[in-house]
Length: 311
Image 1 (tube, rainbow, N blue to C red):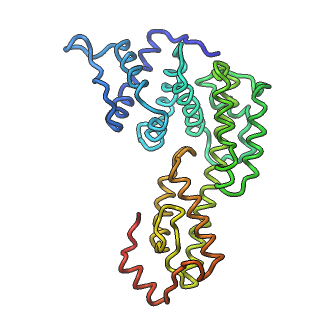
Image 2: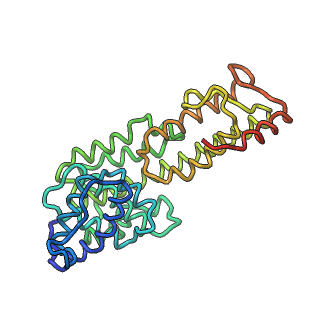
């Protein structure tokens, strides 16, 4: 287990690096925490005062907000991610929210620092431990025996061929359950390396399947338009019964940008899965079941009059 061994100087360095990051977080998510101020109006806040303020913000910031912020802000850097991990790991008492933030930060740090173009076979425990060494220290590359189920879950996830299969399989929930059941053992460095490896690989599988679904939807929409089908019934995906294919194509393009997030995006992911099912149904059903068909000339006019408006 990692113990807090920071000197006052190191703690001051962490506090001053994180102060502007947390200030931006508070501003972006309108967190109701008073500004960090010194007891003396003429002096900047001390490291201790900043640290106390960081703890107050920690109690208000949710992991999904931290995730969204760090995956979109230009302020994120290797040092910022490392200092965030140091800040959370040095807490003597860690909440479930702290564990979830540490879990996310480990994967985010690894993703940031690891070279691009990695093959799945490159990402083994030894490599993950090496990349995480600046925050976890030198660590043996052995998965604790009690975490053997992680490999079983990962192998099952690799066999999924569609995003719906992964989301409905319960595999993501099994991974989260193992993290919860770990208790204080989660913070054993070897366990954190194993969880970081697992989460990174699951994220890879998730994004691969997500992009496969988006590409399949766009291919299906192009095929429907080739047949002259310009609207489809998408009520199951919370769209209309006669949703223009041109609009759906633009929505898919916007989703490719929006889904640069962790795989717990919730409702939008269900809409993506249901939209692929709706497109598959339209392809197999042809003109039956409420699929509305137009001539090619009418289709061109319909697209122009809609202005290609995105949802």
